[in-house]
Length: 94
Image 1 (cartoon, rainbow, N blue to C red):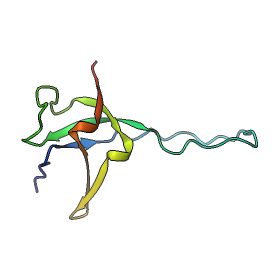
Image 2 (tube, rainbow, N blue to C red):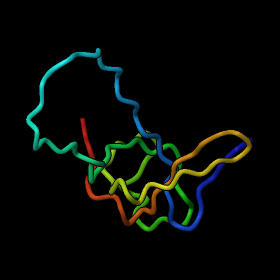
Image 3 (cartoon, rainbow, N blue to C red):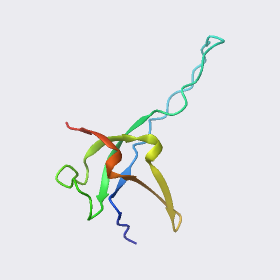
Image 4 (cartoon, one colour):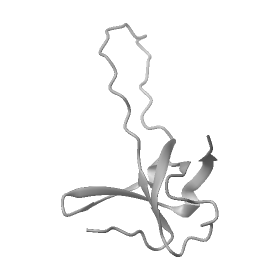
């Protein structure tokens, strides 16, 4: 099955964090866990044909997007992530 983004969306891949070794340490009583990072670095897997800035996007490009705008879609037991192109805030080169 081939998935193709539409309506100015980018099909993206979210890199997984390496598993961290468990450790025990003490935290101050007023410590508050940071909920969700505002931005996420992603890799472009495919581009909608109607994206306006296709000269910036290439398959494999790494970019920074607003985390809250990443949409998870399930199709036939597969999970895909898309983000509207206007929520890309930075391009990561190198």
